[in-house]
Length: 135
Image (tube, rainbow, N blue to C red):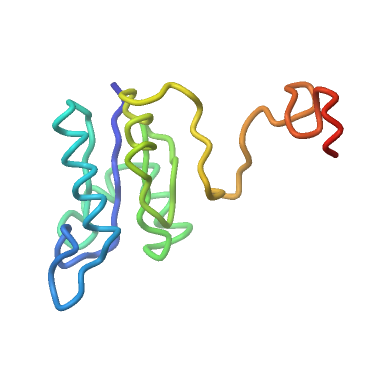
């Protein structure tokens, strides 16, 4: 099973319900991580404020922090590969990363890391292939 690690900016609490206003993204990711753990997924969250040594120990995270800094967090890494930056993955994405969801390829609604979906070329029958005449 894939190892999913989520590296977060310095937070006073990971649940998102501290203080006068709650952070919906933190509430959601807390519930999603708990659900995946219940399903047996290897998933962990690391907070820069409470667990800074983990950010230094992982080569991928250390390089990211050196290049982008904490403004690019949260950072999601699956088996040492960066899969999302600046936002938390959805529950469906996390399930797929863990190998517990739909085996279909992840096609995020947003572009992450400036990359495009693999295989969208004329040879693969993507937008301009297959004689669709869409281009």
